Structures are given as structure tokens and as C-alpha cells.
Amino acid sequence: MKTSTRSAIDPFIVMDVMEAARAAEEGGRHIIHMEVGQPSTPAPKAARDALKRGMDKGPLGYTVALGLPELRQKIAELYDDWYGLSLDPARVVVTAGASGGFLLAFTALFDAGARVGLAAPGYPSYRKILSAMSLEAVSLPGVAEHGFQPQPSDVAGLNGLIAASPANPTGTMLNAGEIGALAEACTAADCAFISDEIYHGISYTDRCVSALEVTDDVYVVNSFSKYFSMTGWRIGWMVVPEDHVRTVERIAQNMFICPTHASQVAALGALDAREELDGHLATYKANRTLLLDGLSKAGLKVISPADGAFYIYLDVSDVTQDSKALAADILDKAGVAVTPGLDFDAERGHGTLRLSYARSSADMEEGLARLARYFAGT
Image (cartoon, rainbow, N blue to C red; front, side):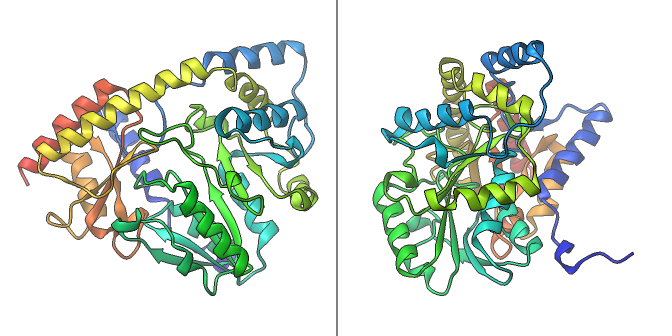
């Protein structure tokens, strides 16, 4: 049986690294995980307790396609808390993770063959999902001067633009003026604007700015995976323009029926766990300081300031032009799982690595020591 040409997409390399690390652990090795952007902490206690109560009440069956009304209301209240915005909960769409949100957004906004711009380096699955949907992912090579972020001049000739702040893998952030300029350029060019905000709540200098603070003509994608420490629960949300809600609802009904009911119940609890979650942020902040200082002392070059999220992007071009092979060697010889930059930038990622510091500080200390010894010997 033949497979479709749309299915011929590259693997998500970080997941392959994760599998290699798992196999090494199964063989008895102690691996430090700096590859995947996943907190080592569980879902917050309030989330777990909410799910227990929900399961005791009765079966968790289908919900309406847009998500539990009470969850949509509480997400809307989050926008008042974080950004001072009065958001109509009717514009909130609960999704099967941010990935489910991107599928809905791309389906709602683009016809086959549409050209969608995304920064490089950037989150790998954007371009792979776009390709699998017969859409053209247009790479926009970023520069350090602009935080490796897309610029208004990039919008010409595009049907859509994805901007992420904080960004993966660089951790760079856009301020209100920069987001506003992108939004204005998109409106002028009749280009759909998608703002990836899944790392909001995780920043170290300025606060994160939502695109909704400068425009309503945007699809905002967010998730409970990162700040809320609920990666495996696969629950996220979108905020869409009022006149797009029914369009997205029809697609969601047919693609997903509804987001997982159990995860929605847990997410309701997570929204009341700010004290516990801000404690995680303190750990990330300490880990960031530890790695930025330690990597510099080890002679490794950090490409970007990592103002948000929990990643550090390294320039290792003086060591290799095969970041995939280097990552495999580091796993083998140092017992540290890291992600090749090739995952994030097909053209320039051969000489870069991404490190995640979302794990415990003890793990980060050990991982840093192992990396320092490894690079001292190369």
C-alpha cells in the first residue's frame, strides 16, 4: 500500500534523541535529560486533586467541541490576571495540546499551497505540520540583532506568519512594539497572523506580551504543557477572532470531537495553582543562571540571551558541522541528552545545539559538569 507524498516529512529529531536516551537508561546508564522541553515536575497538586474529584462525580465523557464552558471562562480570566485584558470566553477554544491548536489554525486559515512564514531557528513541528497539510513552510532566517525573530519586511508574499515569543530554541522575546509592527504588516498584506505563546509565564527579565494586547486580528495558541507543567496531558487553547469561532468549532467537531475531558478537568485545577507553579519558575531561573555562567566558563558560546522559556542555544560550529552526530556522541560518551540544532534550522543548525534546563537543579549541575568535561576533551 502506498503512502502519501504529504507523509514524507522529516522526524522530530528531539523525539529520536529522547528514545535513544530511554534505550540507554534501559541498559542501565544514568542519563541527564537536557534534550526535551519538558518540566520534570508533575501536574500541580490542584490539577490532580481536581481530576480525582471529577472522576468521583461520574464518567468523563464527551464535552462540547470548544471545551468545558467553565474552563474557557477561567482561561479568559487568566488574560485579565496576566495582561489586564477583558477577553470574551466565547473566543477561547480548548484544544488537544498546542499541536491540536496548530492543526485547527492551519485548517481554518489556509488552503492547500498557501505560503506560511516561520523564523529559523524555530520550533520544528511548524514546518512539518504545514508540509503534511500541503502547505508551504517558508523559512525566514533570523539574525541575532533581532532576536532571531521575524520582521515586518518578511511578510511580503506570505499568506500567513507564525511568531513565537518566548521562542524555541532561542528563548528570545518580542515586546509590544515589535508584535504590533508584525500585526500591522500582516493586516496590510492580508496575511494571517498566528502568535505562539506556549511559554508565557516563563520569563526572567520583562514579562511576556500577548499579541492580544495589540490586536484582535490574530490566532493566539497557548498550552498547559510548559508553565503549568502538564506536557503529557495534551491540553491547550487558542484565542481566535470572534467571527472565526464557528469555523474553528466545525473543524474541531470533526477532527477531534472534543479535547480530553479528564485533561480539561485537571486544567481547571491547574489555573488555581499559581504559587506552586511560580516555585517552578524559581528553579528555572536558578538553572538558567547556573548554565549561562558555567557554559561560558567552559568556553562554550551561547547564541541568544534566553530571556524566556527554558532553553539555551549553543554555537558549536568550531567543534562540528554535524550537530546530529555530535549530540549522539555526547549521549554516548557523557551521558547527557541534548538536541541537535538541525532540528530547528535546516540550513544553519549543523553547528548548533539546544539545551533544556527544565529539569531539577541537581540534574543541571551534573549535566553541566559532564558537558564541561566532554568539551574539554574534544
